[in-house]
Length: 423
Image 1 (cartoon, rainbow, N blue to C red):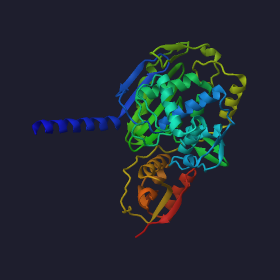
Image 2 (image 1 turned 45 degrees about the vertical axis):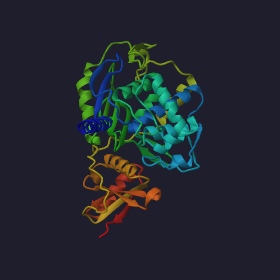
Image 3 (image 1 turned 90 degrees about the vertical axis):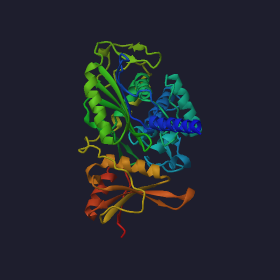
Image 4 (image 1 turned 45 degrees about the horizontal axis):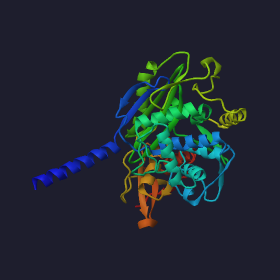
């Protein structure tokens, strides 16, 4: 009996350790020119990537563009499955077609799960097959622990990565697609008559930061990969498992403040290789690169491709820096009770409680002050496979307060409906 008890305790400890590993915090700061790790916390511990997954989806879209398999104007059909992806969404409808340009910007700026799934089906035939292609590409880039199950980062228990391997992917994007990488600095773009805004709030505030991606699920916490150029320095930072968007951004800023000055200077461009820790020397001197371009080595693309990318970048509009930092995301309530207040707002309905939580966390992070005193709330409607989960904020003291929150959300491309609280 004692042996059995010890075995059970050991099994429980192993399971607990695995759970802690999968939901833990991690960070890494990398000198992208020399490959030197400047700071690391649990850099090789497995965590869920969330929407950092789209970095690989975008990498493979850039690769298809480079091969000529896609052009920026290639038509990407939106399937019923892609259109049904839970938020974040670009707002695609089943049966419509978008361009590769719109899909890429939808992933980068809006973090659209629908855009990611549509691109996956375009390039892989199915999202499941494309995910296998993504994992194979990860191995080619030296990301030996990363596994992709979908193209967007929506919750999947087996979809994992590490802080170190996310830095590898960021460096690969800059190294292999230096012109296209500039799209990660896009703050907004126009899509079918409406302005779609981004939510990489730290990028809009931190001097020298030019990308690249945020991510959040309940299982992953708040994730961020950032890149900063400071003169001849180039630094990549990764933070995984933040408790809030605000604390994640603060941690990233503190890490960069501490380590950007320690990165390599020097007149010749170096970028960390993803293979064997080597560095790759640039084919051109720093002085030969236009200041508006990412200072990373690359094989010069054909002139027509340069012009098309330049036109795309110049055509994407930017917005003013948001006045408010992201607010903390409190635990979302799933009971029938609502907070005190006479008004509430609904921003969407999702197929799972997890998807509703993701949407509410992101909305609160983006909207800032108008949602500061509201309470995130999910409400299940229906049962079993037919259940949907309403994503709401409750506790507004007046109709005007609810209207102000709706206005802030609509400016950031959210739907919003005001409702009087029940009871």
